[in-house]
Image (tube, rainbow, N blue to C red; front, top):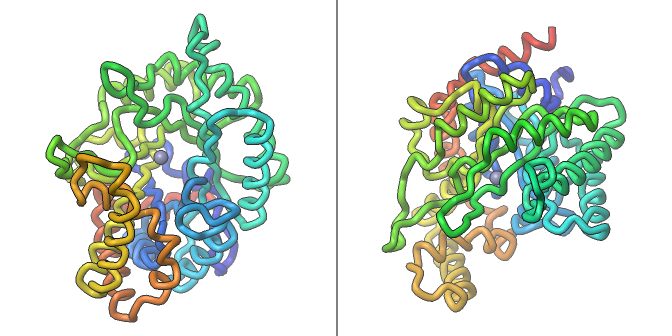
Length: 379
Ligand SMILES: [Zn+2]
């Protein structure tokens, strides 16, 4: 661990340290940087390791929809960690997504990876799960395009990191993909085939993201109201983890799409230890917007009006709440200057909310004490 500069440590160090314990490391998608200090403070007070992350859609060379480039994101997270004095965190590239897999897309992806490495990222998630060969005659053939692109990019990251340690996440089964009969879940055989093929290509991920019933963001009922539910298929998740273990494949599960899952149910029912990384994204954006509603109502109204005006035409039949929830992330870049010059009292409230909510997440995840596990593993 670096001495006292509170920079990010390798994602592998954190994931390896918690592996074998009943703990899930929270990975926070920090779309608006104000929440970061609150998260780090809670991490420090509860001795919980944490990942700070943004996906390609949220943060790329042009700023993604958060307006942050990898360099900007890294700078803000480093500053927040330093301000709090917290050491057990990783800077993670969530969803480095490849959707077509053609040469142009692979090339631009490598440019993004170059920028992430230059910005000091210590962990990477390659998501080529969209590349699924529906004509494949068996699982191996179906997964072949994903295996190929994931291996190529993993080797590219390895070369770029030039001997430095880092975390690696890969994805099999597109999260939230539906067919005629509902969400398509990853099968144990797919997870095993995928990881084994990657290992054969000299790629050894620390975590595997699977499609296990969660979706990104909120879930709604027919009236457009938010539904709080335990949407992940726990037996399927356990079966996948067991199949990986039975086949001596050393990889944990990364759970995506946790926003909207009640934390008492996470606390009691999530298979901690099978799942070792838990992504919480939309939730942190809600913390900011729900605070603005009271602390800076005119700014909130401007954001609301802008979002509804822009996205209502494309969403007939949906409630304003649903349209706002689903698209307010696109307002972050539009209102960047306002969101990064909030009044001191607003900042304080956001950080305090983020602090309190993080306590509850870390507790529900069984993460208390995980930072010490990380430090111990380095001795
Ligand atoms: Zn995700």
